[in-house]
Image 1: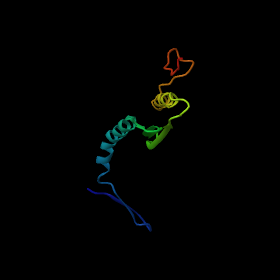
Image 2 (image 1 turned 120 degrees about the vertical axis):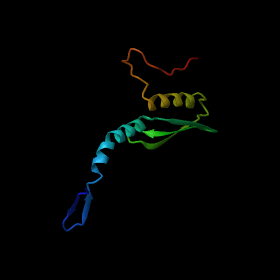
Image 3 (image 1 turned 30 degrees about the vertical axis):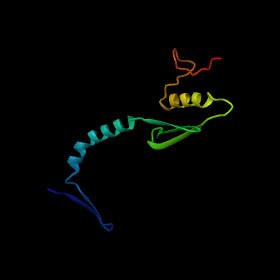
Image 4 (image 1 turned 45 degrees about the vertical axis):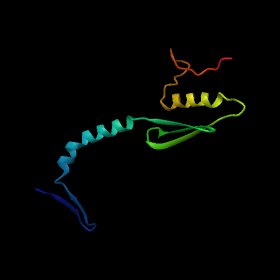
Amino acid sequence: MSKKLKKEGEGLEVDFSELKALLEKLPEMIKQNREEDLDWSLTITRADNGYLLKGKSDNMGAPMTFVIEDDEQDELKSHEELLWEVMEYFSFQGSKHDKERIRVTREK
């Protein structure tokens, strides 16, 4: 049996016949969206003058593009910055208070 609600004067019509089926599917839809949100990816492309990083920004899932340019005076700078950006993007840089953490250091 299809039940309909019509709001007078505005012509709004809601069909409740599919509501039960929608409510039954809702938990699976939420689970699927959470799994898609957790699916992080970062694409790194090497260009002639640096790196181009493409991924998702924070929790909103909006596209993110970040450019790291080579420095002619410091040939390791862009590589070092790339490593820091990857660590920050995936949130595994840690802090100075952590018992163990990953660091990027230069040795001469």
